[in-house]
Length: 397
Ligand SMILES: *Cc1c(COP(=O)(O)O)cnc(C)c1O
Image (cartoon, rainbow, N blue to C red; front, side):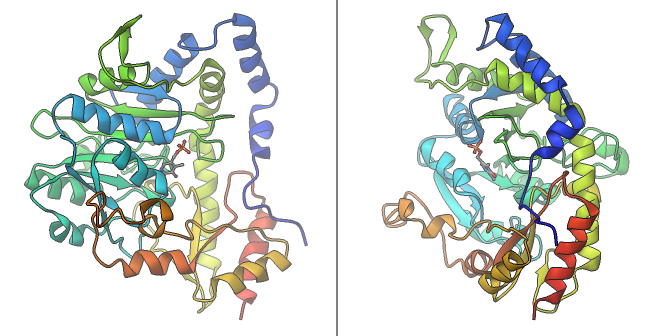
C-alpha cells in the first residue's frame, strides 16, 4: 500500500527540472522585482492563452475578483448596493469579493449534478437591484456559460467568471488549444461563451495562482482577463494605489501586484498547463468509469471533456466522515470543499438582516457541504495511486 497524498507538487520538479530555478535566478540577478519585464511577458502570454485581449496581473485571486468588480463601479456600470448573483456553494472568496466591492451577493442554489449555478433558478433570484452574475467554475468545471449569458442578456446583466479553479478549461472542442475564453466556438454553431459583451460594457474573468491551483505560483498571485481595455486599465490602476502616473492618484486604490519572481515561475509553467490538465482529465475519466459504489455519488460527466479541468475531484457520500476515515486508514488523504457554505459562516452572521447578503433557503448547498469529499487528483498521480483510490472507494461499505 502506497501513501496517496491529496495533492503533491512533485510533478513541477519532474517536468521543469532546473529550468524553474534558472528563471527565478535570472530575476534575482536582474535586481528588479516589481512591475518589470516578466510580469508584462506573463500577462501577454496568459491573455493569449485565455483568448482574451488583455490580462492584468494582481496579488491574488481575491483581489482579482474584488478589483474587477470595483472597476465596474468606477466605470459607472455598477453602483454601491447593486446585487450580484453568485452560487451559494462557492469558496468564500467569491462572496467576500462582492462584499469588498460594496455590492450585495445574492446566493443561488447550484445544480446538484454539476455543482455549478443552476440557470433555472436565476429568474427567481433577480430583483430590480440585480446588475450582474458572477459565475464560478467550481472544481474546474465550466459553468453553463451559454445559458447564463443568454439569461444575462435578456435582463441586461453583466457576466463575470471566478475562474480560480479552471485555468485552461474550454468550451471549444479543440484539445490543443484550451482556454476558458471563446475564440472559435462560433464555427461550431454555438454561442460565444466566456467573453460575451453587453451593450458595450465588458465582462471579465478572475484567476488565482495560489500554489495548488491548476496553474500555481510559488506564493500568491492572480489575474483579471478581459476583452475590455477600459476595464483592464482601471483594474491595473486600482492594483497600483489607484495610480497610472507615478505619485498621481486617480482612484482610492490598493497595493496588489504580481511580482517578478511569481511571474517568472508562471511563465515557465504555462506551457505545461495543457498537458497537466490532460493528465487530470485522464485520471478523472478512470475515476468516473471505475468508481462503482452505491454509497458514493459522482458529478455528471461533462459532454465536452475539455470543459472540465478537474481542479478537484468531488464525490458525495451521506457517510462522508466515515468514508474519509476509511480512506485515511488505507493511506489515502482527502479534503472537503467546502465544509461550511458562505451563508453559514460567522463572517456573514447578521448580514442577511442588514441587507448585506440576500438568499432564500439553500438546502442543496447545505447538502453538498455535508456530503462532499475531494479525493486525490493532480498531474503527479501515478496509475498505481489512482487504482488504489478506486479500489478503496469501491471497498467502502
Ligand atoms: C482560490 C480561490 C479564490 C481565491 O484565490 P486566492 O488567490 O487564494 O485569493 C477565489 N475563488 C475560488 C473559487 C478559489 O478557488
